[in-house]
Image (cartoon, rainbow over all chains, first blue to last red; front, side):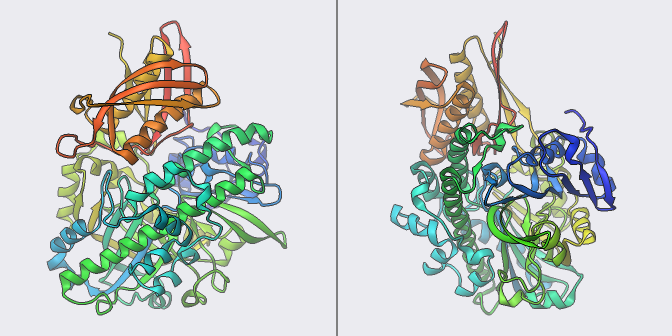
Length: 485
Length: 139
């Protein structure tokens, strides 16, 4: 792969600009959040070229952003953020990604490391049995066509109504677990057929379920509001998305957008950036279908959270309430949202594409739960299974600068193939076990693809967004038990 | 014998390069490459066949649509294929009979889930040896 030779202008230690004149056709500059050390490896691939390509999209305002966990994606880079004016801008399925509303949900417990350690094997086995995972995994819940229509519209609420989790979980889920504007009529029969059997499944690839131990608390006040009070406290992180359903929605609408590009005379540097005006039929149809997939993902994480509580309850012989298993938050990592932002003192409605990026609204914002009104919206940043994960909150700076957005994870550095050639799945298990991390996976060979060495160190990623001021670090947790799909 | 396809690396995902002396063979080999990523093709027997029709705007997107149709059939209906008879192929339409069998967890090892064929870095070329196509798959 050719090294990226483009121009980067240093703004400060954590901000770099790709000037608007780098490529003819860019409407705004690119803004990359990264440390100097990260830039060297970033130049090894073409993700920065993709940042410049996104800047071509009609109606883009501010910058084409790249978070420090950026890596090469389809059309848009993963770790990319772009806001388009809804009046003259476009919406692009590539700016959301295939796994619509891939995201994470974090539960806390009142259990300590000392209480869980002796039962970790039993707990992981129980979770493995209770949460359907792996390729072609089918759910334990049977969803009829009629119920699927409700699920697409109601999202996590559909699951709560069926007895999966509590009403209060919805209060601490982005959008209340239900994105408005979902229209099942805009979803193909194919997507529904892929989605029905997969509802309530973890899936495969980079999706996981992790039992974590709090190792560091950076901000005790904010942590306490989240219910994190001490080092050694046990948390559970669920990472999954909209499964085959979201992929089919993306595939179907990309095809429509392909035609829209020529219909509306949009000039693009990459076919995968296919898009349509937000106000056009094609644009509206995509957003209505995307909302269905986002809701599917929230329902999915809601069901899985319920089985996590059930499993803990069984192993520890206490109810989930007695074990203090409250939800801290649930965030989307792949989504497009219509939001109001202030640009040059003017209030503007924009469609914010976050692909491998997290919403990071500040304290006081109207769209964040009452519980977090004073401290800012929780931001959940998982790392790879051998290192750690972070909890942060959104800031005013993010609101003013990055359309209320921040990073989402570690970001891949080794391709799956390269990881598989250099690392063996069985070695990964042994190495993690020697450090007290139990791993159970449907496919041992695919574990190598998810090994630590395949990812950037999430600590470097979080430090950049913290130093740049677009998020504030709250706590760090390390894995103790991991289930990989 | 000339190779039918090869597998290539891509940052977060995986790609295939398929070859063919004609476009029909190219499309058939791309489909074989897809199923070789999903399972061990030798383990699949020809127990059923399905007639497929796929249409698109041009030949490049037809290739993407063709693979996406097969991905859908595996993901939603759990059918694994190992032989493809391309009956007709124009610049925007394809008719094929696909042979294979239903997924049986006791018999078939699933190596990885393939979730979509993308337009990213999509290339379809003709040279003196025949046709060559590159497709990146989301997994």
